Length: 308
Image 1 (cartoon, rainbow, N blue to C red):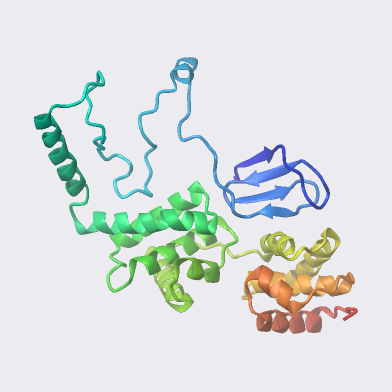
Image 2: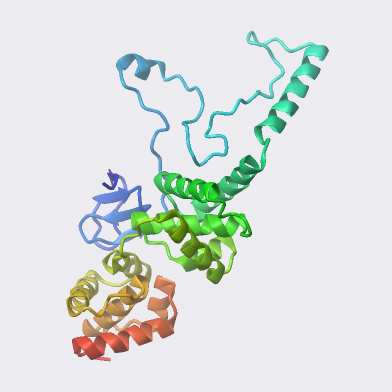
């Protein structure tokens, strides 16, 4: 179930409603009234800890971050502070200060003591950077780390780059949780060729035997419509056309983002909004050729009559 929360003190620029819903799984802020996606790159402000009784709530004692599989050491490593003072606040003597410096040095060296830990350290540092670029939630990061660790157990990293395997794990996590992130977005964020990521993704699916749900293009329509500035009337018409395409059986095997972009383009022509294919292509991160081909197919099988 999606973790949702009503966002206050903000208003929708389209209908001026203040009832906004934040979905921390997909990282989107959606207007509850008109369905406009205000943002698809939100941070998760949830607490890292939870109080189960009044005494814990009153104490509010912090003892470090939570355990996470998205960290090379699961968040259980020992950290020696850099302040050369004792518990009473008095500074260390010169001899004790030298001992503490040596302890810090050996502590850092022993944390990364084998190849797997070094691999996890590099991969999860990159994953932390991609979290902000792609607007991924904490749940998505944990799912990606789980898939990456399973791939490491199967030794899939042999002969492959860490970035490629990590990008494929991110895409697999997005597909499993039905988060609208395309392979092109991940490829541009991680600076690795799309073909290589696609190859790594197929290898992960085959070796780990992951169950990937069939993508639903309906979930792509609000995001594309908001990026292109398409009205609610056109968006509802696009949903009707998409349901007709599903009933006719012509949506099977098609890229969900490309199909959603095509029905939005056709719906804009039906409603007299007249947006260009280039605008829809930029909003959906697909090519104009894809939209043109899907538009021809939909017009042929659905018999849609447009004004353009």
